[in-house]
Length: 371
Picture 1 (tube, rainbow, N blue to C red):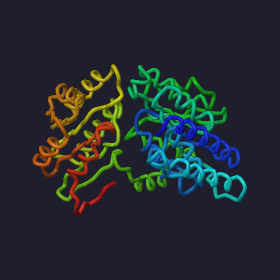
Picture 2: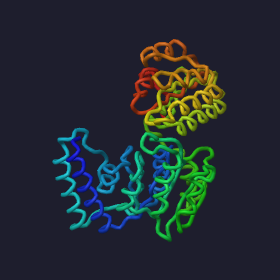
Picture 3: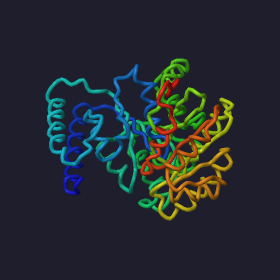
Picture 4: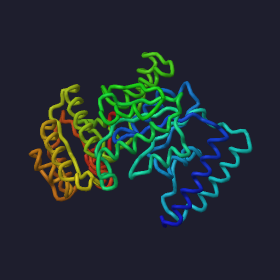
């Protein structure tokens, strides 16, 4: 999209979102963090949707464009820049209808908020002020822009700072950088322990916050369906279980995924743990160390480590894995290597397009279930 048009889009969407929020006054549950943002948002929505008039951001609409689009009721944005004038015209009409006429607008919004660079969260909370803030975890993400993990935490913490005095912060008790955010707000702080995982822990705690019973929360979370590329379990007819976590990756989410691979393998008594990993992008000067650290962890938590990508070579070298020059070669080897009872994790940054690996090794016929 052309830069001038992008600036205009940001301005127009922000103004429209402010008008709608002032008119309809929904309460906002905002979710940020370096890992499991989308999955946590989905889990919260699954627990609350039957009791509250609530809307969640679709997919990963979590940016300067995505957040106001969710507020305005859109589920996606134009993929081509020249569609934006028509899209904005429709957004204005929709806003006017919401302002001037009876509107079935939700009482609660669950908004995912990303921070790809300094100032992102600060911008979003300047118009979408949270009543509830959730910070999942903080790790080395987008370090080309942030330089340090502390700077990432500083930006993520803007969400907690934006809370009103009668608001609530849900913070990860086991993440030191997140735990310290308790000092950045006068709102009430509630801590969650990320076990068995972050999304389920947060959703359960928020469910209790809204007065739901343990039984009801567990029943609803059993119906939770993971989005493609985000810790989605796909079982092939031959008993091979694929963990599709291919949507994106950073060192913290890689660690999280590998630990889940190990835990799930123990749960189902898998024959082998296979980790198929690619580059983690936008890490700047931290890239070499980040990939080497993940390699060492992958070497411990997998029985077979396969990698592809220029930076992922360091993962293979540190973890005693096998590296491939391209995905085609990796897939060719993997298809011959897979055996009944294996569990396979597939994960890399979005730019690596490892969803193609998942598609290649997932049987097109007769899948038992994708959950």
